[in-house]
Length: 454
Ligand SMILES: Cc1cc2nc3c(=O)[nH]c(=O)nc-3n(C[C@H](O)[C@H](O)[C@H](O)COP(=O)(O)OP(=O)(O)OC[C@H]3O[C@@H](n4cnc5c(N)ncnc54)[C@H](O)[C@@H]3O)c2cc1C
Ligand SMILES: NC(=O)c1ccc[n+]([C@@H]2O[C@H](COP(=O)([O-])OP(=O)(O)OC[C@H]3O[C@@H](n4cnc5c(N)ncnc54)[C@H](OP(=O)(O)O)[C@@H]3O)[C@@H](O)[C@H]2O)c1
Image (cartoon, helix red, strand yellow):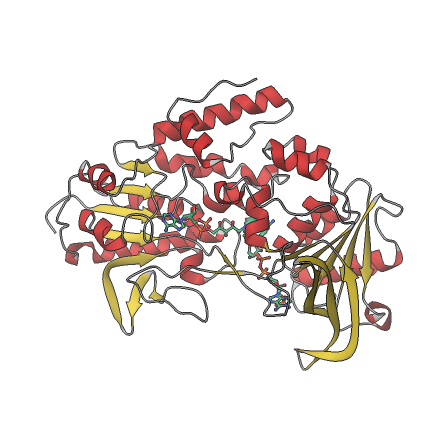
């Protein structure tokens, strides 16, 4: 390797930005392009973290620091790598190494009948809608029925239940865009049913997240546990599980928010067997009651149905395969060793992974820091043996993108879009920003051609 090392990081979510930060810090010669298919950076911090989790969003203040050294790091937004974008192998002609930090965006399926009825969504799609992701502005979820079902017992299930149950006015003070706030204001949902396949002693919610639903204004939380807690359960091994169990035991006796206008029902030991529908739309869900036998979930012959116009499955995600790279279908991740992409027992030269596409869809934002550092360390250790790219000149990248009809959003463009969102926040009042969700409108704002409406 003779040229100064040039690295592309694909994905401007936490793992991409932590990897870029580590590369820049550990090797003063390295320059990095952070590439994202969206015109805005921050991945799931912008498009996953719930709008009412304002404190969590403030992690952006730390992530933005990655772009401080403008001479060494560049943002290239609005650039999809792969199908319908620039092929990964073409991009690799411009860099010594490429780190894929593209996340896990595909919703897992339940594999039950009726899953394709209108009104049934994966949490990836539903959360993207309420977070103003440009690919999901047209989702228009049906909120006209009093019942809604959320399947799953993770923090995402709690996020979705909370957003559906809490007063819409609370969201007006967040970055949620106007259409979402208006849709939630008009919502007829009164009962949000969270369907959890195991018992109250098994759930791994973050206790703070569980506590939060017990503190919502005008929302009652009802625990349906078929008497399991009253009969007594074994103490769970993890502290957070014990904290959850303590809270749930208290809530069985004293439901928080009793008499509230809306209800969140926590249904334990139940699994969906069928999504019910009429005229192509969801009308409810059929559940089977479970028992736990030697830590395995076993279905009983007891069934029940819940009426609902909306079903959201929050049961996890898988990654999208990256053309030209190996992929493990079972885990939905790219096989790797310490971040080096592996084809069998051989590393794929110059190719690395970080974040959810590397280790699967679990872990909080901070988990991606150590993960990104590990990948950066592997790449930097390999650098002396990596081939010099055919086109090492940084200017060659935008020219190449142009050949594919791609006009990138640079950092200064994003800053214009950012400023316009902040301006809209001031206009709405009581919030730091209002997101622009439509892709064209984002691009207009980024390129300074936005109409100053209102
Ligand atoms: C709904 C939800 C809520 C969450 N809330 C919290 C929370 O409150 N607190 C917390 O600590 N953690 C939370 N997490 C977890 C946290 O968001 C993840 O740990 C983290 O975002 C994973 O980072 P990542 O960079 O691997 O993936 P992502 O954040 O998904 O980033 C991947 C990036 O890659 C880009 N990309 C994908 N494909 C391509 C392509 N082909 N070309 C170019 N770019 C591409 C995407 O646009 C995206 O920006 C939440 C997760 C979810 C799903
Ligand atoms: N505020 C926060 O800090 C925050 C917010 C959101 C997300 N996150 C993080 O982001 C990551 C992803 O969250 P997540 O909620 O998507 O994932 P998760 O924590 O893995 O939860 C997925 C849930 O789906 C259930 N499930 C899987 N398959 C199922 C099936 N076929 N039928 C019924 N239930 C099924 C699992 O049940 P079992 O438990 O029985 O396996 C599990 O409870 C997590 O690490 C989470 O902590 C953090």
